[in-house]
Length: 213
Image (tube, rainbow, N blue to C red; front, side):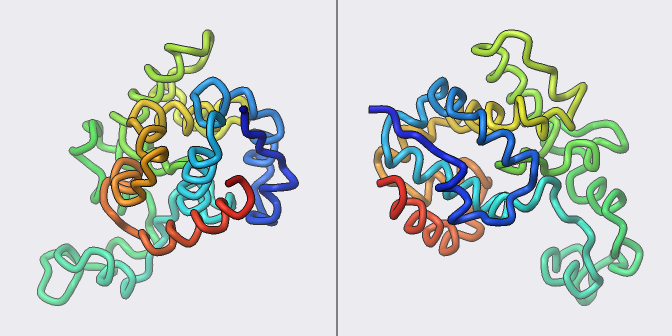
């Protein structure tokens, strides 16, 4: 049985969703079907829980890198904390400079501005040039005419593609099987790279489960 996701259902959890996300889900059932997410209630619940957490209830399109000095020291104490070699004041409220520092020369980022160019975007906050390349390969393998997200990173937010990107990456990382097993911890590591916000993701799982499970 195919599980349907409607805007009315989503609005119960994300009443302030961004217009581009609203449009993506309005026409997005085919993407959920294509990538196997709608095959079971558990997959839908886990997928949407991760999406809702990463996008802050579908309100965030770009990663917020506008940090105060205090927040920089709290998030990156080894870089900006007491005794660190970097000045937090030099990076505070400068998203481009901060992104190029913390994301530069890793995750496939090599050019001077790659950290900012390939900062977090979209439903699962795709981050790093390698991730944009992976999304390009994954979506193009099943959807003819999909864009090169490395060349056009903002296409990750296009309503035609943003749900395909999230769903393709989800499938490509083996998350459908982890959702079937109910392995929230490993799901979070596959999506986030660590276990950040695990308690909040669990709360989202309970909320989505009340609707779709």
